Length: 320
Ligand code: NAP
Ligand code: G4F
Image 1 (cartoon, protein in one colour):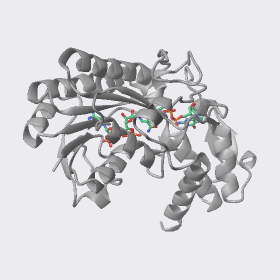
Image 2 (cartoon, rainbow, N blue to C red):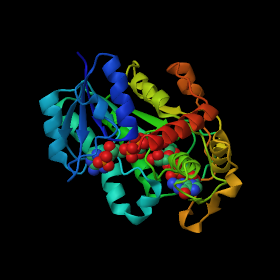
Image 3 (cartoon, helix red, strand yellow):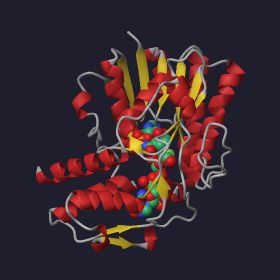
Image 4 (cartoon, rainbow, N blue to C red):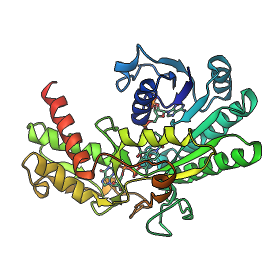
C-alpha cells in the first residue's frame, strides 16, 4: 500500500486530495496543527479512513518524527498561511510557515529518506504584477504580497533540493481553485455565501473590494488530480495548472446573483476596506505543458463552479 502524508489536511485542498488518494488505495496520513478546538469540518466524513496526526510546519522536530514513524512514499505540502490580506498583517509568520516551512519538510525528507516524492503547493500569486500574459512555467515572478514572496521562496527551495540532493521534488504552480469547501473569507465563497444569505433574507447587502480583479478560477476537486499526476511522472518538474480562462470578480457576482434570480447591482457595495496595498490584476494561465505532459484538463467550467458554490450555500443555510 502506498503511503502519503498530506500537510494542510484540514484545508480545502487537503480534504479533496485525501478523498482522491483513498480512492486510489493509498494509506493517508493527514497532518493537522494543534488548536484548542478541532476544526475537522472538511474531513469529518473521512475520519474513519485516514489517520490524523499532530504536526506543525514551524516545528522541525515534529516533521522529522512524522516521516520516521509513518515512512511515506509521497509527501504533499499543502499547509500554508494562505490568505493574501493576512500576509500584510502577519508577514513574518507568513514567511516562517509558507516559506521556511517548505525547507523544514525538505530537510526532514533529506535526513529520513531522500527517495520520498515531494509535492509543493506553489501559487499563481508568484506572478503578481504579471510580466507576461498568459503565464507559463517560464514567466518570471513578480510577487505583490508577503504571501507571494513566501511562495516564491517555497518554489525555489523545492527546485534547489531537486537539483542539489536529487530529491523528487515537484512544484505545482496552481491558479485559483475554489469549491463549496473554500474558506469564507476568499472572494468566491464570500460571494456564494452572501448570495445565499441575501436570498434567504438573512442579509441585505454584500460588501466587496475590487470588482475588476481578474482570476483564472477552477474547481479544487479537479486540481488535486494534477498534484497526484505530478508525483507519478518519471522526473520531477514545475507545472502550471489552470483553466486558461480569466473572469472578473464582477462577472462572478453577475452569475452568482442571477442564478437565484437577483441583480448583483442592487446588493453589492464596494468597500475600500477590502482593497489591498498592492493588487494582482490579471491572472491567466498557459496550461499547455500540463495538458501535454500530465494529460490533465479541468472538468468543471466557470459557470458550473459558480452555480455549484451558490447551490451548496443555499442548501447549507436552508438546513441550518
Ligand atoms: P487552506 O484551505 O487555507 O488550508 C491551509 C492549511 O494549512 C490548513 O489545513 C491549515 O490548518 C494549514 N496550516 C496553516 N499553518 C500551518 C502550520 N503552521 N502547520 C501546519 N499546518 C498549517 O488552503 P487551500 O486553499 O487548501 O490551499 C492549499 C495550499 O495550496 C496552500 O499552500 C495554498 O497556499 C496553496 N494554493 C492554493 C490555491 C487556491 O486557489 N486554493 C492556489 C495556489 C496555491 P488550519 O486548518 O489549522 O488553519
Ligand atoms: O479570493 P481571494 O482572496 O484570492 P487570492 O488573493 O487570489 O488568493 C488565492 O489564490 C491564490 C492563487 O493565485 C492562492 F495562492 C492563495 O492562497 C489564495 O487561495 O481574492 C481574489 C481577488 C483579489 O484580487 C481581491 O482583491 O478578489 C478580489 N476581491 C474583491 N473583493 C476580494 C474582495 N477578495 C477578498 N478576499 N474579499 C473581498 O471582499
